[in-house]
Structures are given as C-alpha cells and as structure tokens.
Length: 465
Image (tube, rainbow, N blue to C red; front, side):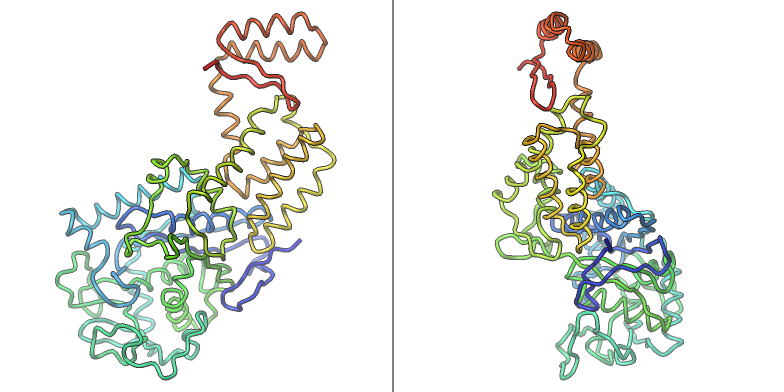
C-alpha cells in the first residue's frame, strides 16, 4: 500500500518515491523565535511531525531538518519593515540573542507537551551565516543576483520558472505588486538575499558586500542543501509560505545549482478564528498556555488537529475542542481500564482495522479517518467482549502520538506498590477460581482506601474520593 502525498508543485496526490531507497531527506520550516508559538503555528508543527511519523510507519529512515529563524525575518514576509527579533529586543531592552533563546526554549517545551518529536537536527540561522554568504556569492557570480546600496537582490527575471510553485502570473505586474523599498530594484518581485547599510539593525555580520544581515529566504536554502544535498525529497510548511518564502527558496536554490530543489512540497492550511487566519500580526491568537488555562490539555488540542485534514482550514471553537476531548477520553478510558491479562496478544478480527488505518494515513495523511479507525476498533472490542487490542492501539499511536502508553502507565504509577501486589494476587486467585481468596483480597484493597471495579474489559482500581 503505497504512500501518496498532495504535492503543491503538481497540484495532485503523487505516489511517494524517495531519491534513495528506504531513506527520506525532509526539511520543514521552523519558528521565527520572537514570541511564543501560537496554536496556528503548532497546528503546522503537528502536521510536520505527523508526516515524519507516517514516513517512519512505512519503514523509511527519515533525516528531518528544521530551522530556527533567529535573524532576518522582517515584519513583512517580503523586504519591508524591521527584523521581528530586533523589534522585540528593542521593546524589551534585551539582546536579540536573549529573545531568540527564550522563545526557542519555549517552543521546545510546546513540542514536548504536544509529543512532537524533535527533528534529527534543528539548526539556527545565526550559526549558518557563512553558508548563506557562500550561496549568495554563487548566485552573484552566476548572474542571478545584483547589488544595490541597500541589499544584494535576487533577479527574478533571470529565473525562467519563478513562481511555478504558487503559479504566479507575473505578466502585467506593476511596481506595487510587492512592496518596493529600494529604487534600485530591477523588478517588483526581486527579493533581498543580504541587507546592507542598515545601521539600526543590531545583529550584523561582515560580508563581501558590506556589513549586514541575511534575508529570510536564503537561510532555508543554505541549511537544507547543506544537510540534505542539492536535491532532496520533501519540504513542508504552512500554505502562507507558498507565494513568497517557498517560491523564493526554489528560485535561489535552483538558480545556484541548476538542479531541481525538492521533489515533494507539502503544505498545511490555516487555523481560523472567527473566519480569520490566526496570526501574531493580527493579535488574534492563543498559545498552548491559554488553552490549558481554558481547561484543555495539550493532547486535546492535538486530537482536535488530527480530527481535521491538514489541507483543510480548521476553525477554532470551544465546541470542536470539546468534541476532541470526548474522543480522546473515550480512548484513554479504554486503555486505562483493561486489565493486564489483555495487554499482550492480538485478536484475530483486528487485521481489517490495521489495514484500514494504514490505508488512511497513506492516503495523504488522512488523520480524521485514522482517528475514526481507532474509535471503531475500541467500539468493536466492547461489542465482541474481546479486548486484546492494546498492542494495535500502541502501533497506531506511532502515527497519532497521543501518548496512549504514557496515559496507562501514569495511572498505574499512581497506585502504591502494596496495592499493585494485592491486585496481582487477586487476579491470580480469580484465574484459579479461588473465589474466597479473591473476595478477601478485594476487602483488603478496599479497606486501604481503593475501589475495585470488575468490568468486561478487566479489573479497574482507583483511589476513593
């Protein structure tokens, strides 16, 4: 059952075929670390991680690279305004490096809470300045870039297929098509590779064109090709990256190498709030901390994201979060109630569900259908009174990442060792049909302040309230 991904470049679901058999080179755009990640950002990173998990579920060895933008991302995605990190540093009277490190660590904490695996390598823009300068030099030498008093610009007129990812129509575009901040720019779509003569910018480095700092787009080309090669398998990000950031990455990378940059471009849609894209610039965003204050734990948000297709707009509402919470609790209730005797082994009838799950995730990461399969297999277990599906649920959780094993083990750890021992003795007594001993052990457990519940899926023990 082959994996198919919707490729933004071809505008269709393409069968995934890696460059090197069994291995995947995968780059995803990371956070600009000037503020907390909002949950719209985090939706994209859940998708990014799910894509990696599905690749690994299919047996691929994934080399996953993600950048941390800690310089060069201006207030506009184009060439306008101040650097976002510089602005925050000046506002808070801290250094840009302090700002970047604080929000980088906050981002890592969000990733851990959402059970988003850390990429193979997370690389900072500020640690790859020399790589960016070398790439810009190559573009200048090949005639793809020119120098003005304010910047080194990429000359989009020299790249025949500029705009192919976003399918931009450049004909008839006037000078206002993109913000023009330099009268020496040749074309409105030309973009800055390196900014110079910006005395108010705090973070600057020496370069062949003068002291300055990189544009936003050049970092991803320089770092992805450094670690994955001039052509690699998959590049992911949000759909807002398509018309500018990823379009520019393709132009500068393919201009420098003369080779195809990426085979599969995969993009996640927006998280909407009141029919508007959630963003920091619009000040209409929530963080993971806000959700916890509203009574929704991180795994509830993750389930909320998984219950929608990544390419569809997702509306943020209390009702949708509550539905996700209900679904998650249904799964958690099952895995925490089943007794140890049902933990190992598999029922004969589950194979069809395993096939349905694989079919769902391999159909362009259809996580809503994958979640539906999880709920269906639990429902079927209750119906049949055959509960050996735990191993299968753990297998499914390799993709979903909703911490099924951790949830069960966290509840087990809440019981004191002496209670666990008594429970084991009682289960053994029941297996040997020593009902007198079983009843005596039940009374001993309950006199210690715990309640025993014998359910169809096994015994459950919890502390009396």
